[in-house]
Length: 209
Image (tube, rainbow, N blue to C red; front, side, top):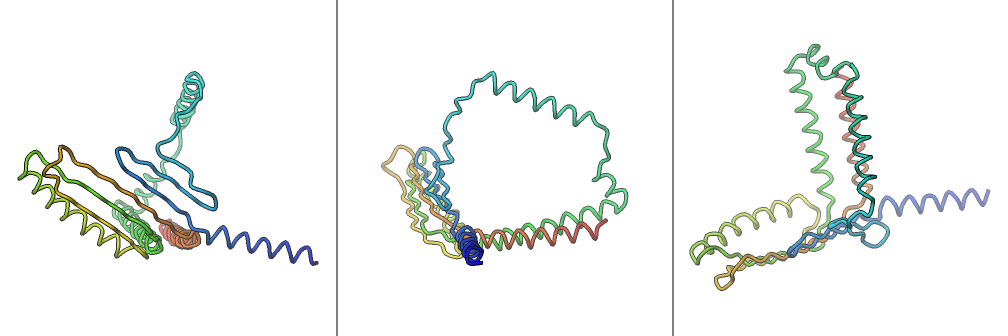
């Protein structure tokens, strides 16, 4: 009995760690994009990806196999569920379903984004145009685009720490951009939002039949 109790406690602790340990991303940009993702363990680099060492023959063989499978599936005669739905409910019925599904997806995205914590957003950009007048115009355009966009992000996430520096590069030859982003979200919020959205979509599809 004690062993079972210890096992259950350990399982609960493990589930708590899995659900409440944040998924973290780190994005860096200077000449090229570098993306890291971390969850439970240290960050793993996703972009740029390492070049594959697999032989070209194996890759070609795999592509040929996938092509053959695709052709076989295409050759099979089967009913078109989309056509059947339109025949039964009309085009207006399809449009209503698409609108409802789009609303569910947007609500899901809004719910998830409201739990995102951006712990660091550092952007430094030296704006350079063809001449002084063009530089001034591009600098004004960058300010008009970037700061309102940052305000929208700030409004839709849980926390947004930003440090943005835009500089007109009158004495520079080309535009220089440096970006650093660190953000995270606790998985349990994604799971709850995804399950709620899936249930709504399922109910909607059942009612449409």
